[in-house]
Structures are given as structure tokens and as C-alpha cells.
Amino acid sequence: MKTHGAVLRGPGDWEVVELELLDPGPGQVVVEMAYAGLCHSDEHLRFESQRYPIVGGHEGAGTVLAVGAGVTAVQPGDHVVTAFLPACGRCRWCAAGRSNLCDLGATIGTGQLPGGTWPFRLDGEELGGFCMVGAFARHSLLSEYSCVKIDAHLPLDVAALMACSVPTGWGSAVNAGPVRPGDVVVVVGTGGVGCNAVQGAAMVGAQHVIAVDPVEFRREFARTLGATHAVASTEEAAALAKELSRGTGADVVILATGTTSPEITGGAYRCLGKGGTLVLTGLADHTMATTVALPGNITTIFEQRVQGALYGMCNAYRDIPRLLRLYEEGKLELDSLITKRYSLEQVNEGYQDQRDGTIIRGVLEHQH
Image 1 (tube, rainbow, N blue to C red):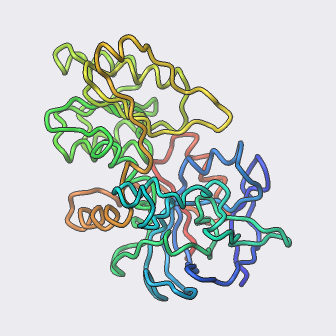
Image 2: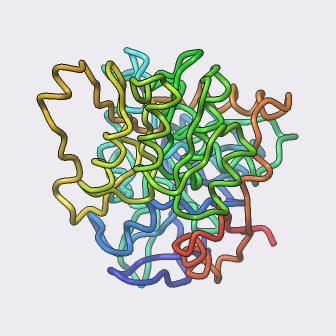
Image 3: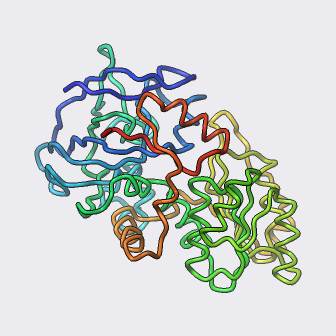
């Protein structure tokens, strides 16, 4: 079938083109996307990708149109959230309860599906969707391992945020920290991921949550989600964390900036107290080899921990339904996270707004 989507033919801006979508093979699902979130991870593709051309978008939600042979997880008509980290349920990592590290995720950078299938063709050339999803296309071909069924009554726009930003931020606090009642927490970067780290930290009982962002709009928004303090720099946050902890420093520091560098991680580290954990959630541009430079002696003597966090260490099949239930019960804010909606043709405008710091989360509306 023919469809339209935003692709990168190489470094540069997104281009909306007509694509050919392959029919579903065994274990594969065709999804008609309703919404796609504008995540900074796709922005990194504008500078370097494992493979060009590539269809963008990994944060999506939509309706199943067709399934291939042997598919049991979903059926036509089901509403689904895309899992940008597929989960086979059988590999070493899935069996250990760490499905965010599933071995099937090895090809998410190129978009090639399990078994070697390329879901799209462009001018006769095979190409994949980012993270094996391609949510910037109106229709996409996914592995059934990348589809999480949700209740049909849930709004698909906020459901799309469950594909990445909400669990990544929330889980960075709840799972990776892990934040405990009474902790002093610093969240560096309060965009689409960081504001959900604020929500997670507040939900599990942090005594103080310090939001750090140079953009006043984002700082003030973080206050509405549970931040007790909001400052513009890590220098301010480090002094405040030391004061609020009565001399120790933050128990957990979550780095959720759109990009990272030794200077950014160094500033976050200086907020950290004795016995604390620095959670590295934000990604650097692929061209930057070194993003973390820490004083090893202090890390050793203070028994500090550096913890990477992929998808907030969440399990998509467990945590997406759980977080949506919290939303339904009024305990997790999702609606106000969507600052602005864009058509597919406005994808570059949306990313410019993200760079300018004028939105928390932008979403592409495929169905309007």
C-alpha cells in the first residue's frame, strides 16, 4: 500500500514523501498511526544515523489494520502504543525482567524488523522506521513485539506519550534512582522527559524536587507537576540541594537534557551528595564520543553511583497499562504535557519549536 511519512535522506531537515509499505509477513502488524510524539532522539538523526534514508518517529499510537500469520498479541481494530524497544519475552534480558534490554533491540537504529524485513520502500530503495517503528509515517509495518494493546476508550494523543517520554522520565526517578520518600532530587532538563521525572519523584515521596532548566516556561511548568523549587542552572541547583539536605547534597540527580556533554554532566554531578545516584537518561549527539568526565576519587570515597537509564528501566507491557491507569485516576498528568499539535507537513516547525524551548511536547496529528 501507499502512505506518506517524514524521512531523512541524509543529515538535514525532514522531508514528507510518498512511501510504499510492505504487506505484513509472519509476526508482523500494520498500524495506522493517529499521533506521533516529537522526541529529541529523532532530532539526533538529523546529524547522524546508522542508515539513511530512514523514516522518523518512535513515539506513536494508532489502530491495527492488518496482521500477518502467527500474530497473537493484537488483532485488527485494536488500539496500540508503539514500543520503541521490542520485547520478545524469551531472551536472557526479558526472562530476567529487563525487557527494555531485549536482544531484538539490536536493529532499532536502522529500523530493520526481526527476520531482516525492511518495512518501507522509497523510490525502489528499502528503508526502515526509526526504532523499528516509523511513527512519522501515516501507516507503518511493525513487529508484534513492538505493539502494546491499550483500552479503546483511552485518547490516542496522550497514549502516544507512553511510547517514550512519560515512562522514560517517570522510570528514571522511580526505577533508576530509585527515589525514596524524603529524598532531595534534582532533575536537570525539564522538557518532555524531565518533566515526567519530576512527576515520578513527587509521586514516590521526594521531600524536595529541584527542577533545572534555562527556559523559564519549562521551569514553571515543572512546578505544576510537583517541583518544589525551580532554578536556571546546575550551579544554583547544587547550592540549593546542599542547603535543603542540610549539607549533604542531592540523593538522586536525573540528567534529562536533550543532549549531553562533559560540561552538562559535570554540572549535574556537582549537585550530587554523599551516597547519591546520578541517573544518565539524556543522550548525546552520536558524533560526541565522551560525554561523562567525573572525579573518580570523590565518586569512590562518597560511594556515589552512575546509573544509565534506557526507557526509564520500564517494561512496556507492564508499565504502559499501569501508567495509563494512574492517568485515568487523576494521579498522573498527561493532557497538559502536549503543548502544541502539528500536521505531518509541519514536522520541521515542531522541531524548531522544541529547539527554541517553547513546547514541552509536540505531537504530529496524522488523523486530521
